[in-house]
Length: 142
Image (cartoon, rainbow, N blue to C red; front, side, top):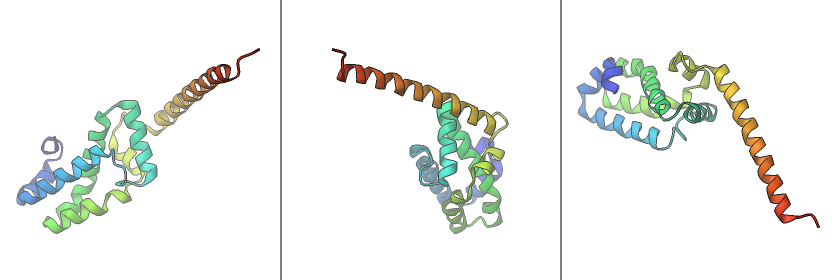
């Protein structure tokens, strides 16, 4: 998928086979932990919101978007050391605003905020119903 979507990045990776392994490990980690500990918390929350609303395809799109944003830094110096340095240091700098701007046209901040409010109301309503049922069981009317 990276080769298809980011051919410039693959040209760099093809120069050194070890970079393929390093990149594969990083991508695997991103996807396994849903970017936890890789991005600033605000950006992680955005990725999780998108994941909950749009599904797992978002995780791949976020990974490709971050790689797209990194590729220029990797192209400046294609050494294994630089590729590793970029992979280790770039993600903590990715703000939610920058990620959204680069991610896609069909993901928009207003939509995410609206969906957050809708789901928040549903969760609160569900919790209130559940609380009411528990209260009735614990304190039945005499």
